[in-house]
Length: 317
Ligand SMILES: [Zn+2]
Image 1 (cartoon, rainbow, N blue to C red):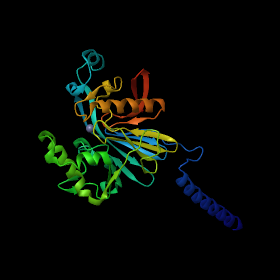
Image 2 (cartoon, helix red, strand yellow):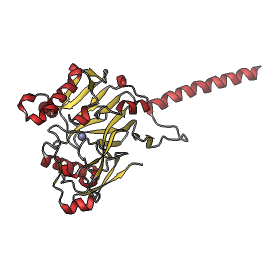
Image 3 (tube, rainbow, N blue to C red):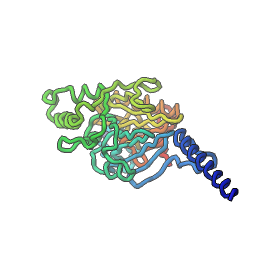
């Protein structure tokens, strides 16, 4: 009997210790020695790929896949086209990314709002559980999932955009822009309207600077040119980083080896190329993995310089 009681107390003590230990582990997120650590990357489905950045998880959500038309490329001569796009086309996607921190669900862009909600469901995240939507810019393939019929599709979220982007799309009277552009300005206004007071306007920082932090470990970085306020987002957790670079690159097969090539959708193609070159140099020199809205699955990987001003992308596995 005595022995039984002693054994019971032992179990109780072990049980308490186990609880305390599990609590501590949850807080520090450091797996106990001997435990199987989570893989860095995980292909969840053909449209969802998850990448670990310290304590955060960043998931690629593919909205759309297509073949791009080289006629939109600016600054690509015959020789380059033959070398980098021998089939006369390039693979491209429309992507969004979901950042999950221990406290927050943060969506970066909303794509067209096509397969976004289905992809989020795969990860077990409901639209009302999204705390913030960070916009890289206000083109239709990035803001299409914000609202339907004037109702916010992320009712619990604040929407973040740079002051330069707001000035261009929202503070401009659509009646004053060329007729073929008016629809884009009207839909940019319609996308933000349902969020009312929950729209947050910020000043992006620059690469290597500490300004522009929106959430712990999430920093906005100016990458102007594709649009006047085009913004990249640096995710930084546990000593690891990932730069979600938005539309810095549309045709990866040619614009990564030849960053001078811009596209006709760039508001300022020269500035877009300058941003692309500066960021490619920065991420390759600092070995910072990147993620892109028009890179192809898994759309997350590393950039290395292959020669002066020319780079190559290696996808995360
Ligand atoms: Zn885009």
